[in-house]
Image 1 (cartoon, rainbow, N blue to C red):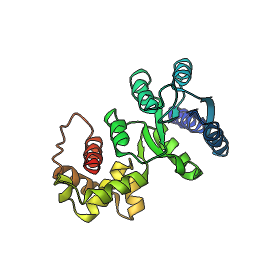
Image 2 (image 1 turned 45 degrees about the vertical axis):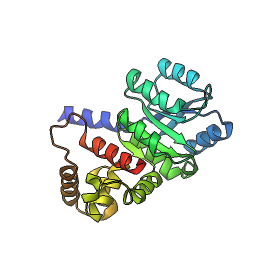
Image 3 (image 1 turned 60 degrees about the vertical axis):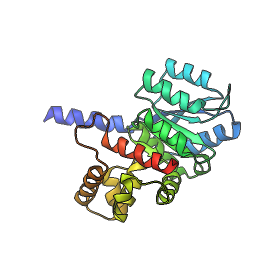
Image 4 (image 1 turned 90 degrees about the vertical axis):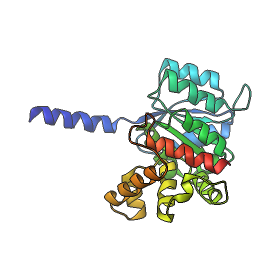
Length: 238
């Protein structure tokens, strides 16, 4: 009884500890805009702002945060620093979540990000960061180990998918296509059930059938949700 009470109190205290967030972007306006937005959010705390990958990575090594928000292009090369940060931290700090910000929709980068491992990873379009609720939801989800891909990117891939080369994805029913899009966005079965107004068991059945139609057996070494998402994004890139 006492042990359960102590465990409960410990859990309550853990839930009250804010997620520590670091921001990396060479644009002062983006950095400050994010900081000011997140200051209004409960449960988040900005612990550092950086203008390039080098200073960010040094700060993470010194005091790892819970989540890093990074622009996809920063000094010194202005190419794919955000992707390199995600790759590096996946090895050196796997418990640190990484959300990559992009000015443009890019199935290539989203697919590349997921290929590094979907756990604690997010891909968010910059013109969505003004939406505090969406931003906080993405940070919180990535901080607790989930994967979030911007819904607009998933919607675009879903639209483009119908006119591409044959794929196992073409055999999905309309409802399964909708749920596959939700999976690719990183939503859990419970979240899909709530948003689609379905029972959790119905969603689980759909997901199981999706995996079956995609040929993803239960003994896959890689997560079937990750594998299905990679197939979905690759199909959109054809």
